[in-house]
Length: 354
Image 1 (cartoon, rainbow, N blue to C red):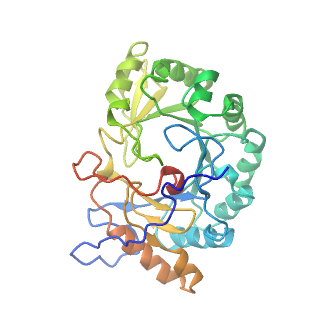
Image 2 (cartoon, rainbow, N blue to C red):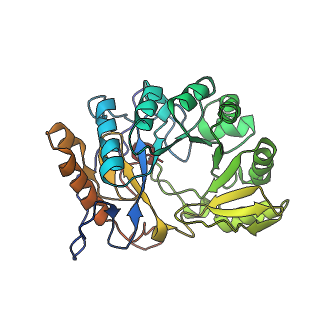
């Protein structure tokens, strides 16, 4: 079925540079004192689920093969990031990254780069169970698997697919393959699955998974996000405290997005990512590369820098690195979701990368 075009086209504008000159440093610094060392790489915009808070039931108009970066192009950009720009952590995202052909080979090539980056992946888990050991052998260090419910009917209602068993199998396989800590990402939706908050945490504790609740963000293709339907971080804490005792974790948060809470005195923890109500923009360490080769300084950027054109136009590594540095120097102080003039990005989450 033909999808609907709801924002896949590239964003043509370049970021606005700050008034003062950029210091002469190879790192991906911005004008607010942050340094990006964590690269999120989207390897495809395609997905095999149709989560209601992400895209319409009929899907989207996916990028063409010509638009997508090839394996050699991706490796070259990641190598530039690691070798010239100080990136130490790579996370592969989508869409659904498992839909990228020969992904295990791509993982092995990234793991072979020097200096060797830490390598993680965020996935919905469909099809991961039978590939978990291959990914671990290729060099994948960790995995995050999305799971918003452990109820089969609610799962099908949220994702429009009857695939819960595949996700549960993926979690087990990831743990068995040593891809630990295995993290579970969950989004609570008002009137749909917020009553499962304690069930999800109990499930994670019983199986040794690290659960992280994420506030729903305005990144849906339909641009239908409604703040009143979002379960806030404080509401999540209240829901969990109905069954568990939560105390702030003594672990230093640093640039991590999740607030961490000890469960019943620890050592087990639960994380909450309050992207909307308590943004962590001031400590953000991320830079983003879309599947079609655009650098984004923020998940909510309304501008981006085209590296694909430089790659295919014959630019050398230092030219590409300088363009990347310029993109990050122009990063805004924050995402401005809570400001009156906030504009949702043109691209939906599936075309940006999680």
